[in-house]
Image (cartoon, rainbow, N blue to C red; front, side, top):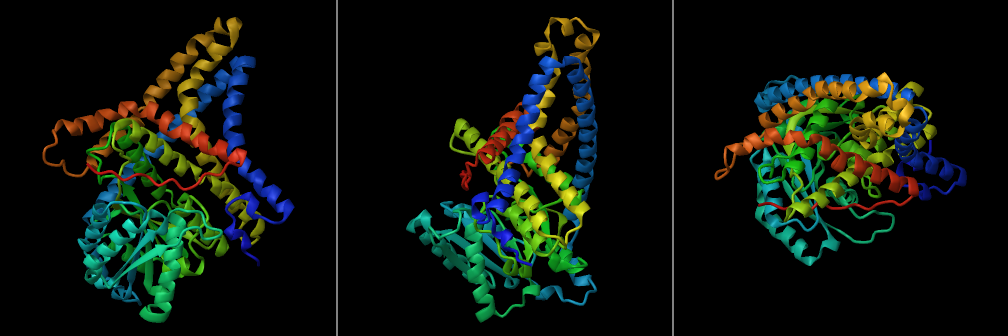
Length: 511
């Protein structure tokens, strides 16, 4: 079967007019559903305030149970993480009884970089050196952008000279600018680096693909000590190891003590969401730093024309292998930077831009829906399940916070004098506020677990800093709207209008 549809990044990539119209319709769905929900609530609150009030009560109950359900998974995920961190994975590898020898497994670590300072690159490399896996089984690929300028290429060469003898191989790859068909960003950089590595594997290194795991990292990713050992154990014990990606849990502890409160809330919320998703492996896709079998990375090909490359590689492989592909959750940590700039307001702007870039993952909805139309081998119910999960996820992201914190008052504000004198009108805000008060248990759980995940307090920091990290969660409702719903709506409106965004590189600042 022709699988040219795997390379689609947007509707205009499709030559067939009928297919192009179908794909374009799918692109409009996230925005239509989210905006339609918000406008519909406004109009119906004016026309049918009593009916909307009943809907409000049901909606609050639905989200109350949803929050409790997610909180349970959050707690379970946290304790599983703690168990994994305490496990001696190197010892488990030495004692495991499998057909394949764990010492045959090589790890290729791809580190795309764009104008990051030398110390940030070195900190990531030092964390790999400090890990417990044999360094003679690790290959570093430092992927530099030509468009960054000669200064940063020279920095990369300097780092290579310093670290080359510490690993099996250290390869610096300069990604050329303005390659036709590419979108400038992390994905195209990693994809180009992968092509160079593939040539090295076939012509020089002679390592079989089945013995390779590729970790696609952000440049600020720091591994915890036994990441590679844990990853190797999962790979060798998986029933069908080359038909799965491997997803660790990201924490944003690199600069967590210096980041402003809203940045900490956003980053920690993202960690907790990933913990929850790990507990629901059937809904899990790859995100940010993750690992891919060498066979998949080099056979399927890493996407080079999309902003959301980390999730696209999963869906690309899922469609390529006709649904015989999954994500294996690894309850082990990798650490990255929380968003931080040179001042408070620039940090806020950068945080919004990063959230908008992440929310641009809504482009996966038309991609998978169109792919499901073209691929007849994937079961229908599986297609429906994945489509619903994607639509519900991005709809909730864009609307839930606004509905929860505004919806209870709309029928009263717009319903008119006749409705405002009803018993339902009087009790609606009281009832909804009580439901939302109970639902704050989820925020309380997040506050507790966030303090338990913190790294040691640096010297010179006041012990009261830990207290502020706990108290900061009172800002969650505002943060969910400003840095959650609004950038998600922004992204979906852009996609609805056919105004495709490019890859925005998050500034890395350490204090």
